[in-house]
Each structure stands twice: as structure tokens, then as C-alpha cells.
Length: 64
Image: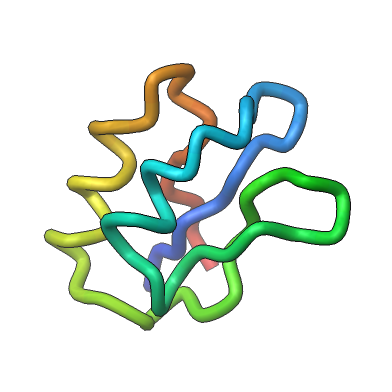
């Protein structure tokens, strides 16, 4: 099974770290919170870096 990143909008504080690290995967949604726009926008390693750098741990992997 493949995995993809997911943002918990209840935890997201809109800091922009994920968008700075992975601009092809994350963007700011209309609600002002980060969202996944392209789960394969960057490599798994780059997305993991964004996950690791989220200050509130709002990003995680989910199985598809």
C-alpha cells in the first residue's frame, strides 16, 4: 500500500513550514490552514522532512 501525507487542520497553526519545504505538495487552503495538493509533489524523504519540521505535528502519513 502507498502512503500519502495528511494535514490535521485542527492542529495546523498556518506557520508555512511545510509549504516552504515542499511547495509542490502543500499549499495554504481557503481556510488559512495547510492542505495537501499533490501527495507526490516531492520525494518521500522531502515530505518526511516537512512532517518532522511541523512545530505542532499536524502532518502525518496515511495509508491509501
